[in-house]
Image (tube, rainbow, N blue to C red; front, side, top):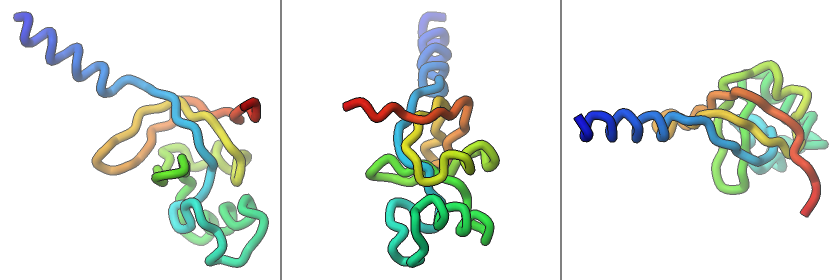
Amino acid sequence: MKKTLSLIFAGALAASAATFTGVITDSMCGGDHSMMKLTPDAKCTIECVRHGAKYALYDGKATYVLSDQKAPEQFAGKKVKITGTLNEQTKILKVDAISAAGTAK
C-alpha cells in the first residue's frame, strides 16, 4: 500500500506544473534568427509561424514547442514566464498561463 501511494505521489509531482522563463521564438529559428535576415526577432518569429513553424520557448539552452499557438503571438520576441508542464519525450510545453517576465535583475 505504501509503495503504491509513493508511486502515485511521485507521478503527481512529475506531472505538476512548473514555471519556465525564456523568450518566445519559433521552432525553426530557436534562439538564432540571423539565418532569416528578418529583424526584429519578433517579426521573424511571427513570419516563421505563418509559414509553418510553431511558437516555442527558448530558455537559453533548449527550445520547447508550445501547446498554445495563439497566445504567444503577442509575446513574440519577448521574455516571458510560462506556467505549464513539459513533456520530456516530445519537448512540448503544455501552457497553463503565459505572462511577460519582469526585467528586474
